[in-house]
Length: 111
Image (tube, rainbow, N blue to C red):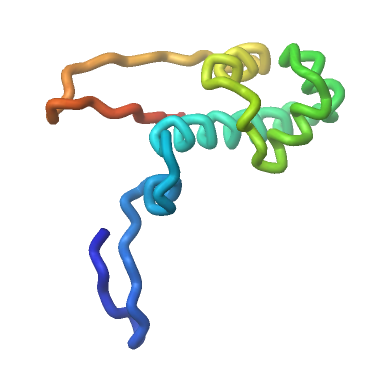
């Protein structure tokens, strides 16, 4: 991260992944999962579902929906989150392409 002064205060530019900036392990996966959770939360609100209705529709328990909507998604895999989005009426497209670097990256692009 690059450091710079803003109004006399030293600041660091973000890498674009807050989880990596915080030095958390599996930062790429956490970024993907958080993006999926944001989309799920938006879908639940757009559909006007209660947490109980959303839980039934997504095939998970209401406490898991509650936790997810509060930012606790540690107990849900990326695959389960994608399944939840499918059950809420969203298509998911996975695109694989050659990487520009020796090791590729995971990226979530939402429409």
